[in-house]
Length: 307
Image 1 (spheres, rainbow, N blue to C red):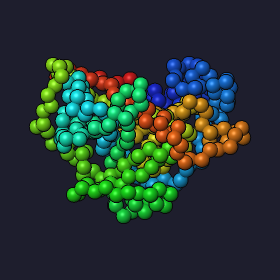
Image 2: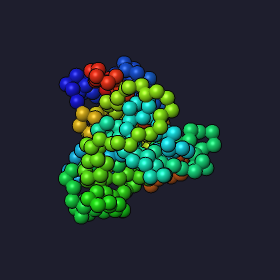
Image 3: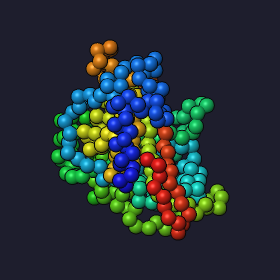
């Protein structure tokens, strides 16, 4: 990440601690209009205060986004659309899914799903899980650390590729893996060519702006990812938090529609809720918003997106 981007994030964080961020900067969270108000009842010091860690840090570092999976009604149509519009390249297809390279930023897996798996009036697409490459990797030690923190790791290995699936505090499927899967495969050019629905734009995707998803208690979720995968909190607005997942790359926005229950409990206003997932929480988590920005014409100079 560039110096200017870091300085801006540091500035936002400093202003947030002084109570200015809710009114001085446009926000999408519940505290955007200020603190001590109906949508954001706590004072800024309490709303943005850190909570005790959900568990001790593993010491792991996230090296790369391995992949994220989107269930769709017609995976071939989706894969062809993103190839034509944003320059994603087809890595492989097996009759039930298409794996797309997003340059070397990560991979998107479009997976066929039955129509009844989607809401009646909603989009026929839903992001289902994420996979992250961590370091250091030792499968036995990784499994032991996950168990120590109350998780039940489920192994999924293919050749040299090793991984474990776990659940985050909202019941979201999370895969952590070594660097011998899709992230390694992206270093080699793919010869696969999908049939495009329109003339390609010639654009190339050069940056992830952020992934955003909603959970029941964003502070607990943020603590989970920060201590498990080494992500760095950048700015806590009071109802959402920004985490840097990969150095110089992806951002995660963890948010809720109200002040974190953990923050309320710390302030003595309510009791902290259980971290067990509920049907409502699971539904909200599926409403992940994936925003990708930063495209350029081939041969142009990529600009650093607005952080």
